[in-house]
Image 1 (cartoon, rainbow, N blue to C red):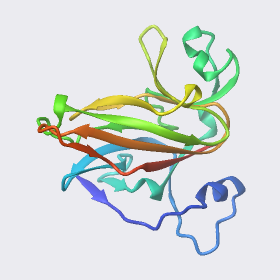
Image 2: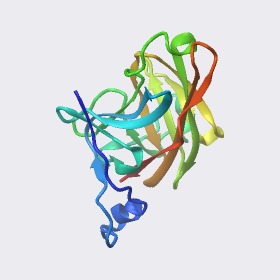
Image 3: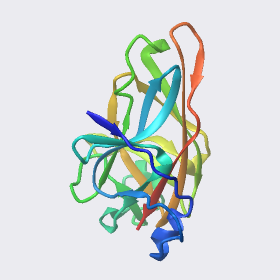
Image 4: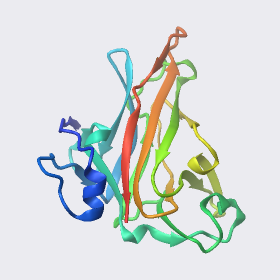
Length: 214
């Protein structure tokens, strides 16, 4: 079961989180800092694609507009870039980096990518393209997986130019590592697009996710 909530968007929430001072007359954002959250959940309703945030850390799960939410990487996400050369997209070996991990850590946010609500047979090849079209913030952002041997495979990376895209299969759900090279507030702009089975193109409005990296 899912519950959809509607709150007022807070444009100044990033500054408030960093300074600890709440902006005057601003509705509080929902801060998610641990548990299972589909940071990008692709849905198709009334002939349109949309991107929402699905918080599964509570029961029943709650859906939010991306503008309503701040996704926080707590200090426990801080680590260093591994020596394995497949991680060079994060920086030099030993450099500081914050990573929300692919494998669940109960003390950290566990952000996923979901197309679970998409029915098969609706889209060509039963897939949608998820694009990261823009990143603003103090450092680089990447989304990557780690194989059984510990090597990284990059899915999205703002460090080598945008847009970047990945394909999500209808009905699928996956987790990955989310890496941030510096602390601070990041704004990530995503958009989903696909072709319906009859060839008609459809796309979502841009959705901006706010991450606060401590």
